[in-house]
Length: 203
Image 1: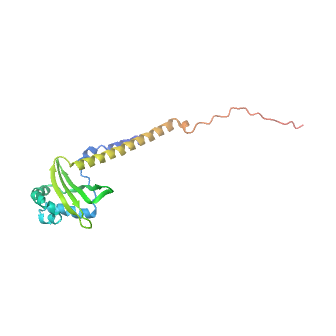
Image 2: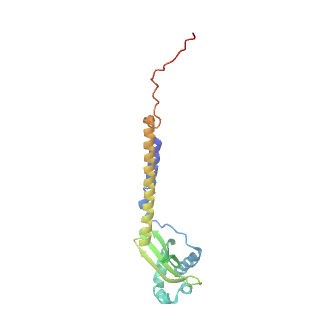
Image 3: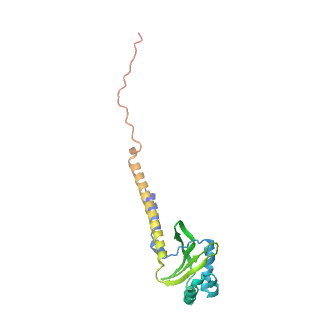
């Protein structure tokens, strides 16, 4: 029985650091065609290369981009490297629309969060274009990242609880079998009836 409780203790202890994981950036893997746009785009902003990012943008957002460029570039220069944390295709009638994508990059250091949102649009048959981008600095994680971390924690706790209940059930079954083996293999009751024997007279 002791090894069962050791396993239970190990399972329970493995889920105790989850509160600390709420502040982590859990990276996601981006499709190659998306990463080929968003990663160089952020790198160009960080180094102050405005001309390069405008080549990747839709013409409708160029003026807004110029107005915010210096401030956003300064935020990225002060930030640690950002990691892709959220990838969301736009919901469509027949499933996710892979031609309209939102990507959120984030980094966390101390009490400060830096996040960058990039929205991509791909015209039919053409390459992705950036139709919106923004960089923010805050003491709180972006709402979508906080929600994603909460969902991961919930699923992890749920799986941990199921594992603990399964081990408790197993330990209870082992305890019952050890102390009440007759439940699974009842003792046979000795035959108590007398057997009558018939002896023929040889004469």
